[in-house]
Image 1 (cartoon, rainbow, N blue to C red):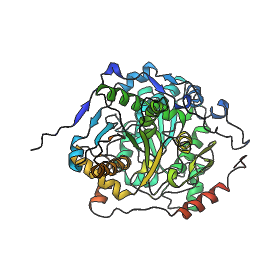
Image 2: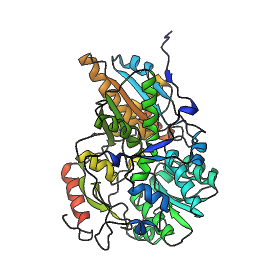
Image 3: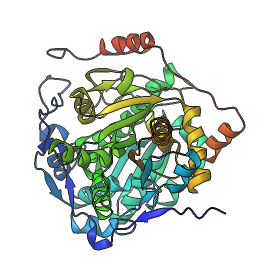
Image 4: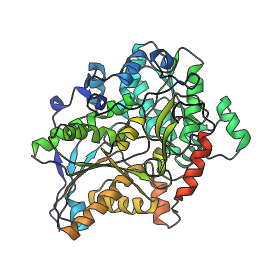
Length: 461
């Protein structure tokens, strides 16, 4: 019998970081500003005040290197943080690789994913501002679950529009949101003008995150007691997630190990940024030199095939214009099982950093990802969320390359959540009914070009 054990690198509760890291402070050049769709001018705090409390708006625009985490947020974080960093000895053995594989496991949170790292502070700051309800979108349901949990901690109502493909395909995530106190609607819905417009044209629409965002934003903008909360993409969301990388740096320091490669899955970009940004800070300061790589689905390849341009963050065009890698704001991705990665755009901050050559990106197909997810489950004993299997697939590919080269490369990934409520997806993989989908470059190029013709005039684009 094998005596290989999973090696856990501990942090005590007292070692948990008490500040979020803001990468904007250290970038060689700042990212392009958000633009008001009516004026074409950079948005200011007042332009965002209908959706967000001033504390979060200040964080969105801040350039300070660090932001203190409020004691009330730290108190909730302590329910599951610090999260474990594991050495994947059994996966290494199964692959026969000389690579050293580590994973920062975020599935230990109450919601089962990394998302409470930002839902908790967002709920706190909104409650502090006197807001009574938060609206949001969700794909696979991990963000909706996380926001419902966070709202319950601070006495807020929570209303969620879930992408219809996931609403129908992941009923237990919906039930989890409802158990935590949230209300869930399939999107597109007949509850909003944005939803009704989509249904009038496409009655059987599977939905998209862009459509669900439009519905949630529409409701929030009409009532001063309601605000909107976003689970990825925006600067303050990515900053909240940096507690992942800050903890990981402390854990690696305990064992005197420096990673060569940092990997995370990318949809809107928050969990990849959460792990990678603190490592990027160290790289920019010359203290280490890891490669930082995001992994996205081939069926929604915003970084690897999208256009870097100003676009709306939602389908109906209610958000500010953001310069990002986009597939076009009305792009409807194939309804893959990794619902959390089905977003038409990439975080403007990650897009800017990618354009600056500071990070890499690859795309992988669904069946390859689940193949690696099953290997991971059978070796490490954790069934990963479909989103996380994208990072695992890239880790497995790199680890196999190390067999050929003999290189003892140190690889770390963020395992963004567990797949306990995603077992039907694994069933489709195991019974052979899972399919792959990807796009030709010309398909993406033509779709984006057509979508961008419907934008307001933007200077320089």
